[in-house]
Image (cartoon, rainbow, N blue to C red; front, side, top):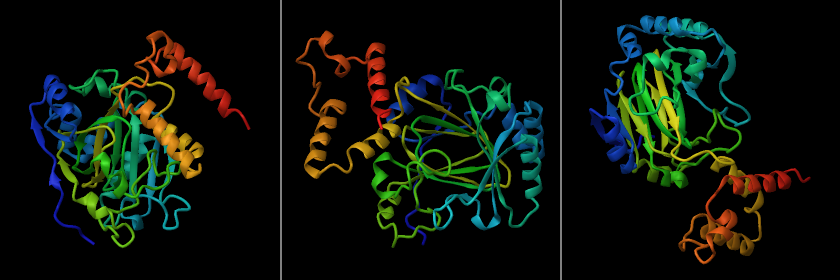
Length: 340
């Protein structure tokens, strides 16, 4: 079933520099197409010349280290996902030479019904040393390393990232369909632990949504945005915005940058959620409501600073999270998790 109307176009920004990115785009809290952001990259020039030139450019930087290669049969239509019964995944993952993957992608261009092939989320520092220096990201610190995604016409199912993201189209076109974080309730996420590639994914195929099975998805569709990138364009995706990614050409290359605006501490929020599921979800309703109140009061501070009445030096882990407090919490958690 095709839903209407079509998603709203994501806003385009041109001539974006660091000041504009930090002062206007990030505070807006919305996805943004950064038109022509990396149009002057040598890698983009190679991609515009031809697919073969793009492959040769990458071969020239290849360190010879194995990369993760994903392969799916033609029957999956390029969509890396679960098998029909969800007992496994509909593709295989193995390590192999980057050059082998490039050769195979070029050969698959001649097929009318090609298999799906991709090299995904590979850090260039290890696989393609020199890429970041030759193709600098103008909006981020050099400490934020790029990752490269290479493939044919494939689809990455709707998912979120627990980071901010800039994704740059180097070769071929990409379509991003985006949903705001508050659509969690309408996107029907799959398992948290068993996933195609990291974060949990929506079970809805946005190209053919089954509204009998997933009726609330119609609400999500009403909030959707769509962004189509040409080589040299980039997209900024704010923290936790859901995105479905389609590669629209037989040979595509994308480079992305994930970063956090807050320092890493003990664990990621998703791991905290897993712990909460094990600890809180199955409590009796009255007890569960008590703990909902505890989280709202102490973690989300729904009623203001919960320890404003205490001297700062007596607030412990409820106050400023110092290295000493983190070490104490870590010790408590390790001790608790080690219990049978």
